[in-house]
Structure formats: structure tokens, C-alpha cells
Length: 194
Image (cartoon, rainbow, N blue to C red; front, side, top):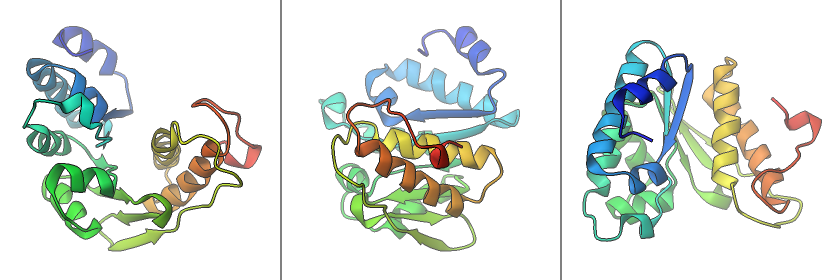
């Protein structure tokens, strides 16, 4: 993924939106992390919008003590950070959604959407904090891809010019539909196709 800077730069060269997560950072080497973050910094400098979802998976970070540092370095190259509150507590210790937003906005993220499961999400976008309620799924079938579907729906609407609050509200609806079906790739009703 990030061992070859030229290969990576070639694939990011024409991207308008680039999304990466803590899962990627947990499986690549320290050298590859530095390469990836530099490529993302360059892409952002040329105008690409960069999004980082912390997506912490403890087993990927076993034996490492640099998770918090890497998350902060990743946030420094991102316009948008999509952390889960539970993940943040696991990595940084007790904190609130406002603490999380302050941490990542201090690193340069313009938008931070702190996800808190069934409690919804809070959007911090420079105009204040906006709570977006979770949408209850019609049935809970499979939580696989709940966060990924939220991120995809959110970024799709952001790329289309919607506000972060509108995008998060739509993303909550998409995630609710995804968890109501089995599997990560599920059909969506027409009203949820952006």
C-alpha cells in the first residue's frame, strides 16, 4: 500500500477525496506510515480533501505504544476526522466528544464528527457543535460496515456540497439501513442513494 512513494503518489494524483483509517495505520510499517502521511499531505496541498477515520482495532496495535502519536500525525494531514468516542477513550483515555474535537481541530482538521453509536454523532465544524441523532435500524442484522457506510455516505454528500451536519444526518440513515441487512455490501433503497 505505501511502501513505494512513486506508486502511491500516482494513485492519489487525481483523487478529489481520499479516505484512510486506523486499520490501515495499524497494519503498515512505521516507514510506510511516514510515506502514506507524506503522500496525503501532498495530495491535500494540491486540493484533495483528506478524511481519516480512527477506526481503532486493538489487535492490530498489539505490542505498539505509538497509536496515539500516529493518530495525531494522521489528523494533521486530514481535513475531516471521523473518530468513534469508544475508540478515543481506548487510545487516549477518558474524554468527551468536545475533547476529541478539540484534539483533532488543534491538529488542523476543519471538520470532526465524533460518532457515539446509538447516541448519535456530534459534528464540530467551526460553527459550533451539532448533535445528529442516530437512526434506529428497522432490525439489527449485522453491524459489519456500519462505520464504513457512515463514512462513505458522509463523504459522498460532502463532496457534493452538503454541509457536514446534513451529511452526518444522511450518513446515519445509510448506516441504519446497512446494519439492518447481512453483509458489508447491501442494496440501498432509492432515497438513500446519493
